[in-house]
Length: 440
Image 1 (cartoon, rainbow, N blue to C red):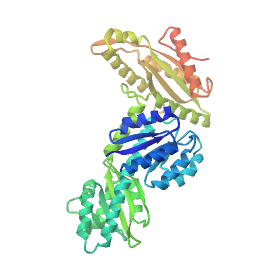
Image 2 (image 1 turned 60 degrees about the vertical axis):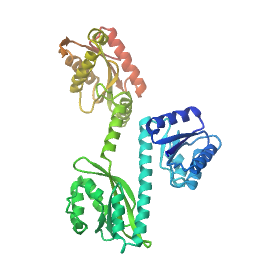
Image 3 (image 1 turned 135 degrees about the vertical axis):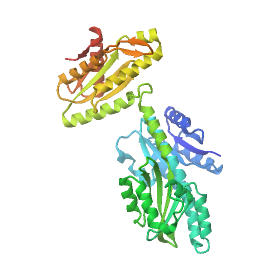
Image 4 (image 1 turned 120 degrees about the vertical axis):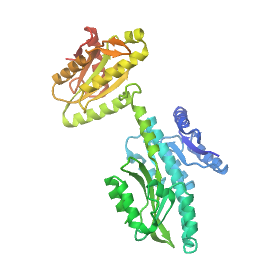
């Protein structure tokens, strides 16, 4: 039977949108349940629990008619303490949800309107955390049971460790290795001859595998007695290992540590790929509008603080439609990719070029000292496209028109600068194309 994710909001449009987004990514493994109020949520939780359905996560809006989100989540925490809670809030001040962070053990809050990529990654992380917490609780329960019979049941301990899907390492109070399973040995690529008798050698092999910063952090954790922590370790070979550390107790006293390890390299690579695809144009691999808007906001904030000039450019390929109509879209796509390479080669490392859409590009030029600097770069961009392109046996020539806007001269915010650059581009095209224009 599937587990359930419950979404709560008193605005039906927002609720259905949230439900649809979660269903696209998690509907295969989880039931996505919708509730329109706090009272409906409590009743739904009781009903699903009675049916034996696990509820790892509830996502609730803060501002709702009747019972507000913080009150609901606090009640849910009292009734279902293992359930993870995420709050959606339209309030910019994080202190406004401070009450629920502690009282409801809030896992995370997300500001509205939310970014779908951030929402999905946050939910995926929460579900993975819940799953690992459940498994580690199960492992800890087994280890406690085993500790009571440790002298006569060492073989049972070893068998239990081998049955887990994670690599497990058990250390005593002095930091000496008590036991580890074969999954642990496989994750860390330990020699087959490694045993608990080689305690220091085993720890050294782990430290040698880690990048320097993580090796230092790992070594520091080995000597801490009462600590519970989950984090990532990065290996020199590029792998990423997720670990969970908790104290090992016997008769109420801490007698060592239990480490649980899992190779999450593929998961992290998938997350990075997902992030990249969400923020980049698939044809040119340039940043898309979403990433461009983020970077422009960051650049303008920095420029304001440091009293710098920023240039914003809109570029448009002249008569690009004729290329598509004459030679086909495959040649048009190749031309866009080739143009991208030449344009990128003209820019500095601190500059950012994005594909705005179709045959349009946008460029951010931070730290411009004078208006002439932007004009000089515009001339370079025009010149670099003058040599012909040879694509699939066709000899093509292409020109561009460029519109330039300057911060703070032409505008103090992103939207104003974008309008000014677009107007300057219109002027450049109107005056004959293959040139640049700015608002002077």
